[in-house]
Image 1 (tube, rainbow, N blue to C red):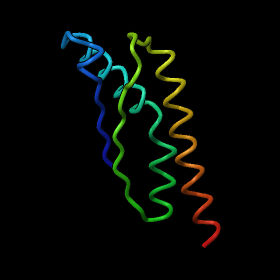
Image 2: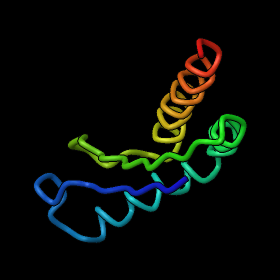
Image 3: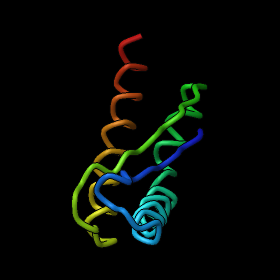
Length: 86
């Protein structure tokens, strides 16, 4: 499984801000990717993800962590549910 992240230079003119957002997103993903990886391995599938931060304000880690958890849980559930239907 591969993943990428980005933040808009339209809303965040300074590279320091964009880099912080990307760093926070990568860390939130790293901490929570295990259940999704296990679901993919169980189904013998691979996945390429790309997360785009579209907010207009600098997020804090707790907010990004919570949202990433929701996203990855939905992906994992979707993968397992589709496998059960086949």
